[in-house]
Image 1 (cartoon, rainbow, N blue to C red):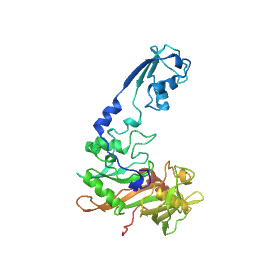
Image 2: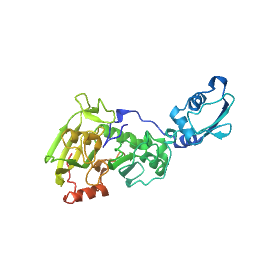
Image 3: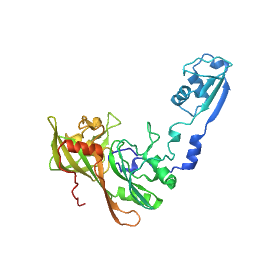
Image 4: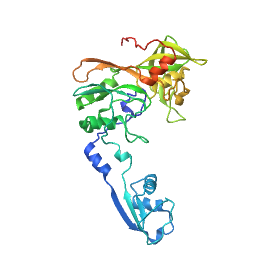
Amino acid sequence: MPSDDGDWDMDADTASSVDGADAGDVADAVEVRESLVTAEWHAQRLDRWMVQLAPEFSRNHLQGLIERGCVSINGVPANSASKKLLAGQSVRVELQPTEESRAFRAEPLPLNIVYEDAHLLVLNKVAGMVVHPASGNWSGTVMNGLLAHHPAAATLPRAGIVHRLDKDTSGLMMVGKSSEAVTALTRMIAAREVHREYVALAYGRVPEQMVIDAPLRRDLISRIKMAVLATGKPSRTDVYLLGVGEVGVRSVSAVHCVLHSGRTHQIRVHLAYKGHPLVSDALYGGVPALGLTRQALHATRLSFAHPVTGLALQFDASLPQDLASAWALLGLPEFQLPPVSF
């Protein structure tokens, strides 16, 4: 499930359950292996020898164990992965678990929860927080916080997370707390029955109203980017102008974006495609400005029916401090999102 400014494509991969207790026990286990260096390994590198001792681990992870002092030769800590071994030496290795194996564990984290009941949780994610553990971000994620806040989340696919926001996109996201809610929310998302609205700051003067209907798929050259391509999935963003300010000689438009699909990086790519990259969105050509260190994008409204009771729900999130400061620097009127009829 790739991250995005509102990625709701649940077919990107399949859900899997996380057993918090069992996973935690395994993650904390440290196994010690000790063996003598045989003649065939005389004068060979230490890290190469460790690969045959513990083939279930990557060479990079084993090199990291050496750096952390988890490997000793004849009782003396090894200091280099390239150290040449001598036949007859005794090598002791403390096989610490990988960061990935420790990912699915509970961590008490500050989650700004704006609504919660027995089946549903809505939170206002801060910029800089990753939603789901992945390479380079194995801890401190929304999922880790959810497992601590709601231990039963360990029994649900992805701890109940049914959609994600980019690490550097702030704003509202919903989480199912029961199997019934997760199933219903997933179906509602697929049926486009969950309405998502964002506010962004984009370079240039954006038209008063603009419909961007352009298919998106992974960029053919850079795998970390998305692109408008004829072979992509249908994608539509409606854009409404809220105001225009100036940064030096450049205009910056405050825009209200309504998603009709939820592709990876959809708003960022669509606006850049129309010549209006988001402020500070370096990946898609938006240069830094207004003190922002992340893309100027905030998920400001969620509207949907409660997955169990059917009650109509709407949640609004005001601008976070960094975007509010940028808004003020542009001299824009007080932030207020207009009502939208779906």
